[in-house]
Image 1 (cartoon, rainbow, N blue to C red):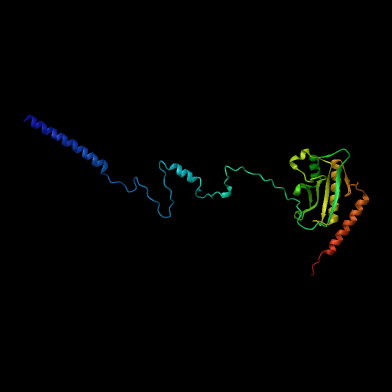
Image 2 (image 1 turned 60 degrees about the vertical axis):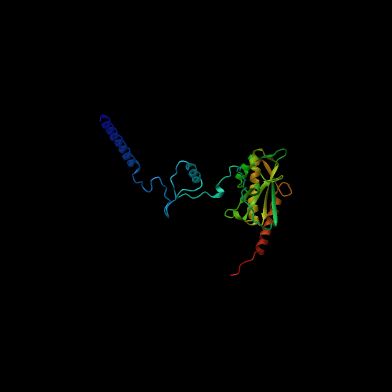
Length: 251
C-alpha cells in the first residue's frame, strides 16, 4: 500500500511539472505578432523609397550616397568630375588687349628707340618705362596705347622689340637685354592719323628719356625736326583723303 501511495505522489509531481512547462510554452510562443514586426514593408506610392540599412547593406548605401544628391542639393555636372588618372593641363591665355579688328592696313608709320652705342636696354627697365609712357601689355605679346572708350577698335600705336621675334616673354623679362624697341601705328586706326602721330611721338621721346636711348625714324636715322614736320604733313593729307572717301549720310 505504501509503495502504491508513493507512486501516486510521483505521478502528481510529474503532471505538475508538465503543466508548468506547457504554460511557459504558451506564454512565449502563443502571443500574436504585430504585422510589421520583423518584416520590411514596401514604400507607399508618392513616398521616398528609403529603407533603413541592416547588417550587410551599409556599404551599398554608402556607395549610393556618393552619386545621389541629397534633397535641396544640385547634382554635380559631369564635366566637374575629375578623372583621377588624368593630370590637369594648364593652358595659358594671352590677353586680347589691344587686338586689332580685321581689316585692310593701308599704311604703317614706324619709330625706333635704340640704346646708345655699346649699350642695351634691360627688360625690367623697359616694362617700367612702358607703364610710365601709358602703354599696356596685351595682344601678340607686345605693348599698346589704347584710345579711351575705343579699346575694341584696336590700338592707337604699339611697341615691340626691335629684334625678332618682336614679342616680349614676360616669364623671362628679367633676363631680357635688347638693342631697342619699335613703335608703330597702323592706318586706319581708332583715331585720325595725325592724332595717333601726336600721341606716338611724345611716347617715343619719353621712352628714350627713361631708357637713355635715342629716337630714330623709319630708316633708323636720328629723327630731326624736318622729318617730323614732313610726317605731320603726310598724315594730315591722309586724314583729308579719308574724309573725302567717307560716305556722308543724306538728311
